[in-house]
Amino acid sequence: MTKVFIPCDSAALSVGADSVAATFAAIAQASSLDVTIIRTGSRGMYWLEPLVEIETTSGRVGYTNVDARALTPSVVADMVSASDLPNSIGLVDSFPWLAKQQRVTFARVGVIDPLSIEDYEFFGGLVGLRNSLQETGVGVVEMITESGLRGRGGAGFPAGVKWRGVLQTQADQKYICCNADEGDSGTFADRMLMEGDPFTLIEGMTIAGTAVGATKGYIYIRSEYPHAISTMTRAIDVARSHGVLGESVLGSGKSFDLEVRAGAGSYVCGEETAMLESIEGKRGMVRPKPPIPAVVGLFGKPTVINNVMTLAAVPMIMAQGPAAYQALGHERSRGTQVFQLAGNIAQGGIVETAFGITLGELVDEFGGGTRSGRPVKTVQIGGPLGAYLDHNSWDVPMAYESLAAAGGMLGHGGVVVFDDTVNMAQQARFAMEFCAEESCGKCTPCRIGSTRGVEVIDRIMAGVDQSKNLVLLEDLCEVMADGSLCAMGGLTPLPVRSALKLFPADFGVNGGTR
Image 1 (cartoon, rainbow, N blue to C red):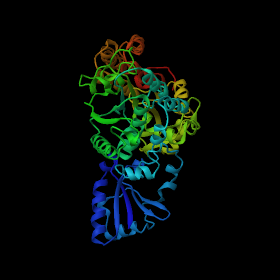
Image 2 (cartoon, rainbow, N blue to C red):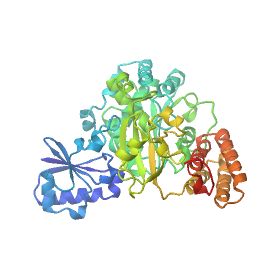
Image 3 (cartoon, rainbow, N blue to C red):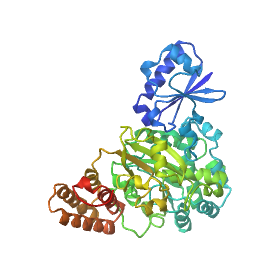
Image 4 (cartoon, helix red, strand yellow):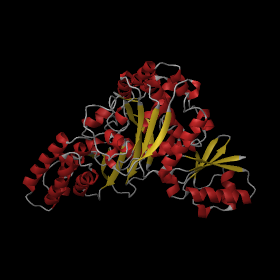
């Protein structure tokens, strides 16, 4: 019997992976070929999807951009026998784009059947959880702290410090909340992991829960991710049936269970306190701090809130020890980062590597430049409210502090590429317009400032009192950055200021630096 691996990841489905799987199975059966088709997550090489992998004694051989309409009995037979067809990339694990990465969080994505807990354990799953159950809560929290793990949702706050706050707070009920409301443009790592390796997230949340004394966890997934919601829900049922969740986690006597909550389409619910409001059934609006969620969080109880990528890194730390994770990275940015290459890029997808890779390496080597073939004009990192960077930043190491020193931010690791046809004045206007559309309305600088920002940028572009309106725009940006209740309004000036600084000519403004 030959195993054939075909992705069921949303991106692969969008380019016909289901049709490829169905057609392949039908032809194989009609041709009496002894094959078993296994649906996996995606390897993250999205420009090559649908990618079909054939198991051989040497490893898996990959065939790219497979079209169901081009599958014939002879083609299927050649693929099953791992013949050297024009669209073959040979052994997938040796494919340079993949081989150059350091996959830790994504080590199993694209490799295993996402809903097979047997596959998960065979490839190293649950080792971290079993190790953590032998430790005290204090011991687990100290290991997470020693690893240097920081929040991958954007703020980069040390995960261990957050966990310690909940551990030390006395309460009759505590919660673990996973923020999977992945709303930033150009980001898709959370979705990929939930669809391709959901047990990693379940294990990470269970380690967190049993360590800090939380018995209940919620995964808040954006409603635009129906496949992720379905896969996570089914994986939770599987984990529960195997004793990974429930009254006694793996027979330890410690209780922890999970539930999926779907978002309601609000970008601002990616902010942790607005997410809590939404989970509680309220309108998603930002809460003032203090109190912080570690003390007064979900339903007024102490709550750990982490991003998918943060929690998914936990099992490896607990399995291999904090030193192994601490050994990866750049300066204070430890471990690996999952970068998502998107926009006008030739080779879009997932790149997981240790912190410290340069922006130029990501865009040119992994991304292959622009899809259009035109020169890269700018790159936006950190979502729609991230700064724009140009070729002068190509040597900047991709890490929290070094990127901040260059005027940018890492955010969730999204890297969106634009070629030289983009109008940066329109992009700056979009940032203000986006904020006006998505603001929860709680604070005036964000709610009103963004609306006024659109109007001011329109006047600048039209050449109306440019010098006065440029001063007004800067004043407005200062008020929004310093006076907004959360990062929604606070970060909106970042793309506006960077676009104006780097590309003043696009605004019809003389001077400035490119």
